[in-house]
Structure formats: structure tokens, C-alpha cells
Length: 195
Length: 290
Image 1 (cartoon, helix red, strand yellow):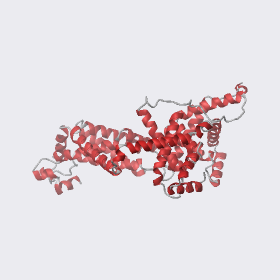
Image 2 (tube, chains in turn green, cyan):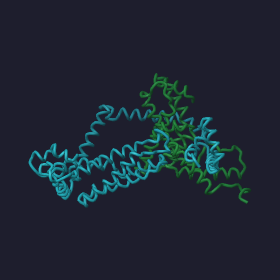
Image 3 (spheres, one colour):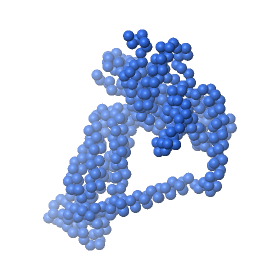
Image 4 (spheres, helix red, strand yellow):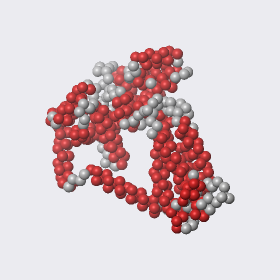
């Protein structure tokens, strides 16, 4: 959604257009869910956080200012909701130990028709990347995910997370280095390349 | 090679195509002359390319088809719960909760400060001994020569200066300028002064106030980190200092120490004398402290 579209949608929300909120949910549900999933690594938690996020957005529409970019605001609310959820989870570990679908359930494979070797390599890579992401700190993961999957610029990430631009650059650098280290430590080679 | 640090930190932006054309050209020129940076860039870019194997997590289409229905029913549930809650029936302004919380916090803080953290009996004696270098009533004896301020006052000044310094350092955001070149020369100099002062204070306290000594020791560690900041320190160094301040609850401990101060001032910071003397050091006393 372009910046102009976001501003238009924000204006409609402020004006009380009943269909605008539904449109906002349709436009952002995957993004909100994706960020929540990466923060929690659990599909049940991700759905809960995404719903909480939209509830908060619905309540906070009155605070919206005309012409505002929605994306940053929505990511900010999602990130805060995810952090709240994680804190509650660590405070009440038993109640939060509910897990939904397996963490590796993705929508579609990277290659629609890979051969057995390629798909084994892809699966191996996914496993390694998951391990690397699990080793990131919360901040590093949020910064990396917002940059890589949500295509936010470093300035937008800084605004979303409420941290300085320099910190965002540092977190991003460190997260990519950790990823590289993890992938280089145990490379996923095809059978032919191993020999 | 010159500029390596700067260009390395901009590698992620280059990988994600955030650099403008001119900066990109300058970076490539640097990489052409610096094989280490070029190798680092290539390695990191390769790692990011491998992320293609892991698309963004998603759910099957059925999940998204029913998503709005689930959200709508939850919104209805929450709205009904809101209506039924006593808070809704007897609404109070939000600021009232904030104000009540703040008052409660202050009262609890004062209570803790006055009861649990009562200063030990040894400190007043020690401070009296220090302040007795001046004439009774806080007046400066002409024969006494220059008098050092009482220990409690020195400690308080030390804590105040430390707090200001730490606030300056933890708020020295790398967002203001280039995050990878933080100089902080004034803060470093002040840290060194405070470190010297800490040695004097610890020697003066001689285990008479263990809590204050522990706080001074904690502060010493942080001050050492600040004093040892190199000229090319970056945001992560500041983050480490911030983490140290947070982990040790430095600001909280300083506040507690300040809360304890009025009690100390009334029976410790001032030399024994008349009732008038107990209210404050008087002009001469202030002059002596200054």
C-alpha cells in the first residue's frame, strides 16, 4: 500500500467510514501476523497477537491524525503487543505454553517444483535460518524481520521501534553477521557438492 | 585501511538497496581497494540471499478467509465484556489512576527510605568527626585552614554529579549523529574526576555505610567503562553502559540514597551545636563547603 493510499485510508478511518477498518484488516492482516509470528515463533500466539493488535487499532482510531502513514503506526502497535505477550508468557509460563501448528509451517515452498536434492537443501537451509533467528535478541529479530520481510527502511524501523537510527543499523549488522555465522558453520550442500 | 569501520556498518543498507547512487559508488570504490571489506560484504550478501529459502511465514487460504469473522466475534466479545465491567459502569478519568499511582509510589518510596534504609549509627559519628574540623555551629575557625566538606555532603555531591553524567551518557543517542564515532570527551574527563572522588569517599566511609559503599563501587565500574571509551566507540558500547546502569538499578539506588539524605543532614551533616545550628550550616558553613 503506497503512502498516499495509507493516508487516504487513515482519513476514511477518522471520518468513521465503517468499511475502512475492514479494508485495513484485509491489507495488513498478513503483515501483522507475520511480524507477530517471527517475534513469538508460535502460530497460536501470532494469531492472538494479531487480533489484539487490530483491537487496539480499532480503539485508537480516534487518536489518528489526518494524512498519517499507517504502516509505521500499525507495526509499532504489533511490536508492542508482541512484547507484552512475551512478557506475560514469561510471567505465566504454564498458561502460555499452548502451541498451535508446528513452527515450520510456511505458506509455500521457495521453489514450486524442486527436485529431491534441491528440496532437501531448502529444508536444511530453512532449519539453519530458523536456528539463527532463534539466536537473535528480540530487538535484532524485530529489526531484521521488519527490514527483510516487511521491506521497511532503517529510518522507518527506528520510528517503529522507538530507537535511534544508529541502533537500528547496529542491530541489523549484528543480525546479518549472526545469520552468516550460523549458515557458514554448517553449510547445507547438495550431494554432488559434498564430494 | 581508513574508513573500514564506517563502510562496514553501511553494508546492510547496501545489501537492501537503501544507499543513494553516490554513496554506493563511494562504497564500491572502497571495496575495490579493501579486499577485507569486500569479502565481508560478499559474505553478508550471500547470507541474505540464502534467506530466499525461507519465505515469510504464512497460513493456508482457509485461515485468512475466516480471519475477519474470528476478529469480529472477538471484538463483539470484548465490547460486551467492557460493557459489563464495573469500570465501564463507573468510569473514572484515566489521569486519576496515574495521579493515584504516582502518589502511592512516592509514599512507598518515602516509607522505604525512612524505615528500611535508616542510616547506620556509625556514619553520623564519622561525619561529625569530619565536620568537627570547623568551629562549632558550622563557623570556620581562622586557624583551621581549608576545611573539606562533610563526608555526607561530598557523597551527595558525588552521587548528583554521577547521576547527571550517567543521564548524559545514556541519552547520548547515536541517533543524533554518526553512531560509530562517539567522542564524549567531557563525560570521560568527568568520569575520571568522579573515580578519584570515589576512592576518597570509600576511604572516608571505611565500611560505616555499606549500602553507600556498594553504590559507589557499582558506580566505579560504570564510570570506568565511560572513562575507557575509545574515540571510535560506537552505539554498542553505549548500549553496554546503559545495560550496566539498568542491571544495577543505579538511578534507583541514587534516588534512595538521596531520600535518606534529609535524615543524615539533620543529625549527621551538621556539626553539633545550638538549635539554630541544626537547621543548616549557615552562611559561614556554606562558604566553608564551597
